[in-house]
Image 1: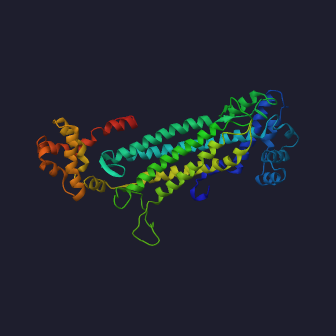
Image 2: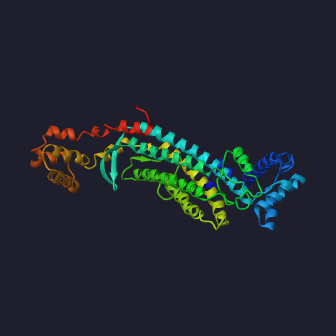
Image 3: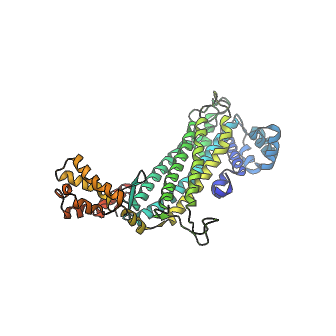
Length: 433
């Protein structure tokens, strides 16, 4: 996590000041609940609210001696609170604070990421409608296949990121779990009603069974979801990188005034943003496997997960937040070249209509095998030396015996491929027009 690829709001969630503030809030809420239950005397929560303070530097200083972050924090808070501090953390264990805090942080991070996805979806929707009928070539295996539209490419990305949004919303719900259950999760020294109270105040839900720690399958699913979203970022970024290649030049990243693409070659306009997104996606995905490996802890708990989460919590969310914002900017300002798209559709002299001719010949009486051979005969000639596919078909005796020139003209109508675009858009965006 470095400032170059970070945005302030997401970074703030992971600052020590924020973390300790959440810890203090959890301790105060637990005191409020225990006061109501008569476990601790009235006034402790108020003392925490009024005098509960911490200093990051002082906590770190204490931790160097005690080698325990929660104890260091509680010791520093006690220095400010005074006598009432002996009732703070009553019946709790460190993981009650750490895991509940982590749930709060991940929930807040998810909220930012959900907003990021909404911004991206808005940009994709706008550009998809803008290019709804902008014809371009569809490619399979990197080879020209049949015409599609650039709007459909973007509509596909919209549908994918809409699914990602639903996945993240579910992961956010799942990760929002609170544990205030004591040393091995049995509530032996703390009433379960304390957990319910704290969870409600924090907008979380009580963990059904915690074994001192919240089960890490929740976290594994959360980070796996971030990994899937990152993969979708890379898929769209890779598409743009391909379209920007010199041989295609169908679309490209916006090139700002004064921008320079190469230290050596002044003509260069490189897809640096989408290449950057590809790299960032790899980073986010690299954090998924450690999250999966955190699931298998020893017995009721160990801390092998702790060092992992101190890294991947901030790194994965900060990196993905930056990547989604950058991708939104790329889509919002993407430069599209419809004329280049048309040029590439026509590049192979009409070969992109081969399937229509094949099907027409079968309807005209030829077997599929004979029709395929007849169409391929002319297609391979164009592929090898160039030429006009329709003219070669018209001069082929076997084809001409089944299809006249008027029929061939109709089969080469590019608008044929647009007839169901409205249907697809309605499926994706849920409305006509």
